[in-house]
Picture 1 (tube, helix red, strand yellow):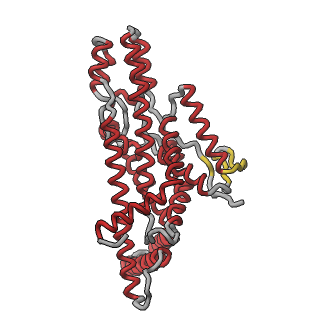
Picture 2 (picture 1 turned 60 degrees about the horizontal axis):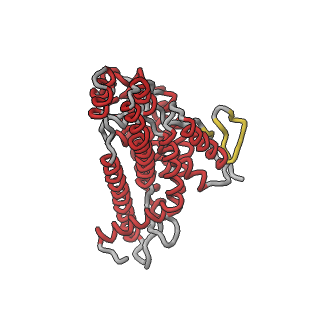
Picture 3 (picture 1 turned 30 degrees about the vertical axis):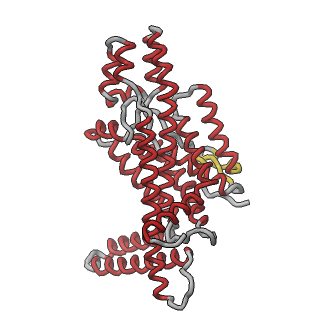
Amino acid sequence: MSRFGSSLPVCARIRPAYQSWTRFAPRRFNYTLRGGDPSESFVANVRPVFWRPILFSVGVGVGTYGLAAYYTNEDTRKWAKSLSKDAWWRTGGPSGQEMQRARKIALHRYLTDELKGMVDSTKHWPTTIRVYAQRAWITFAEMVLNSSDGRRAAASIVCLNAAIFMGWQIPILRHFMASHFLHSPLSGKSYTLLTSAFSHQGLVHMGFNMFALVSFGSAAFDWLGTQQAHVERQPESTYFYHAFSFYVLGGLFSSLLSHVVAARFRFPRMVAALTAGNMTGATNGALTSILPSLGASGAIYATVTLSALALPEATVSFILLPWVQVPISAGVGSLVLLDVIGVMRGWRTFDHWAHLGGAAFGVFYYYYGPELWNWTRRRLAQAMYRTKP
């Protein structure tokens, strides 16, 4: 039985407390809560949009997936051409493993040249500082060189999440961040479905999510790369773009599911309470049922679920109980079951619908994703390079 080298943290897409977000909430929502005709003003001014977020998610998802396939095809075409030129006696094109090996050799040469340049530029530095700087560069270069495309993709996503987290920590930017990186179904905005999937206000929240991404996301991304090694599928020189698009699609789908549930089920219940004259109950429902949310855990649930399906013999340990090891399927199943209970019980601390949406996307992509990716790349190549089917 293989051991999955990571712990299972409690990753969650959270709902900020009411006091911490109403200062940045849409003006029409705050105005409605302050007074006026309860039923008429609330329904007229605060109505969650439905079709626009769906169209946005489909458009951005298809565009992101298509761009990932395009850049993968371009990089593969470049390396296939380079290797075919060097091996003119071959009748067939190079395999994906050969192209990935050539990319790694080229990266090694680049990092070696950069090290030589650093040695030349620091030769006048004090000896102690120069030695530590060169050792730090060598350590970094070895880490980059020995990392797979899946781990590089996970590291890039972590850096992007960290940059957005830093924006939350700057007081002058908090209004901007809450307006553009916090998704509220009542705001009328669609693009925050995507931006909120990279957004974290708290360090602990981001730490848990990014730990899960590096641990499970790298394994899930590497599995996606191995699926293209099959003979009947298109060879590829890198799966970095595929991995990044998987994260984006998982985040979009999970955010969209949470939005649809709020717009189609929770909001009508609030309106019904208003029309019945229960203003207090409706206002409380607005504050507890349709809170804004942010966090990467929807996308991370997709990667965790994909890892559990792709590596069923792996074992994990919970971060708070590292000495307890359980099969990965049991660990992930427990988290999904907890979210199902949260939906049934009406818990509001975490966005359980987003978690379940991410898990559902991971299941879907395990069964249909590799073929869908291969089909997209092949069709795009036929359209751009006029290749035969």
